[in-house]
Amino acid sequence: MKKKRWLTGMAVVLALFLLPVLTGQNYYLLHIGIMCCIFAILAMGLNMLQGYTGLVSIGQAGFYALGAYGSGLLAVKLGISFVVCLLVAILLTAVVGLLLGLTTVRLYGGYLALVTIGFGSIVQLLAVNMTGLTGGGEGLLGIPPAAFGSLVLSTTHYFYLVLAITIVLFLVTVNLVNSKFGRALVAIREQKIAANMMGIDVARYRLLAFVIAACFSGIGGCFYTFFAGSLFPDYFNLPQSVLILIMVTLGGAGTLYGPIIGAVLVTTGFELLSALQSYQMVIYGLGVVLAVMFMPYGLVGVWQRLMRMLSKEGKRIESGAA
Image (tube, rainbow, N blue to C red; front, side):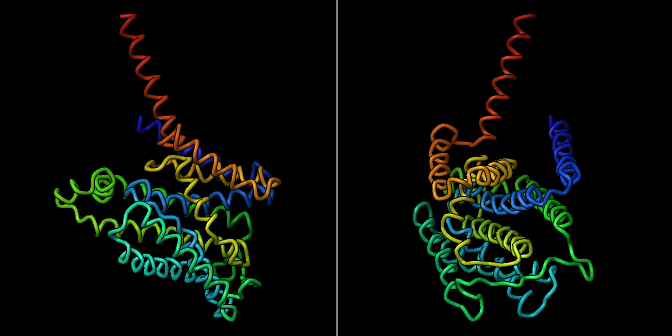
């Protein structure tokens, strides 16, 4: 079964790498593909916090903005290269995530959600009001495209780069989840008192999960910056944090593939429903309510339950025939 899953995964990856060829390098489809990858990175990071640790954060847009503006300002003001900007974005979000995590390490549920909402709002307000640095409401403009030395990446090349990074981060997530660290996070999610009695440092593991989620958002923010070419504070608002939360919940919190599936479905769905404008969030909000009510483990959970039912039915038929 494990070998079959890996073969399926390799087939999907191969199909994704052939996407530019199959679509004739269509810019619109490549744009959607790049944004799917960026949101998949954001969702995977939040999943480490929400899905595996059981902590609800509604401020990921704040870390997303930090990674975006941190890398964008370095590129525009100082002419720093793309690779260095990416490393700085990771470092910046890691430090801020560590500081925020230290102040919220003992908060749970609604209290943590409120603090993270406040954090995201503060970052957005700073981006709006620091006009001399960020450009304020007029935006940070003139961000150069990503380049490696003299090689400026085209949209197709950028798609391949973001896709490759998404795959690498997915493999990192797989290793983390299947390690002692991942098992400790699940134990904390299921019963933190029991986990503490087993010798697990609950505060330390929660803090590490918080930093990992922040770093993933910083990476997504940097890639968005060099793809968009401009940054506006209104983009990094509360609905953006809710959207990332929807991706994780819809796909399946606490699963490996759920956040990626959720990111792809929500991103492409948003494009299909773009004509509805403000009603988009209403539809997705309704979708989250229905998902929580009828699919508590998301689409991946429904699929796993269906496979288990089919497997049991197959075994029953075999035993009956025997």
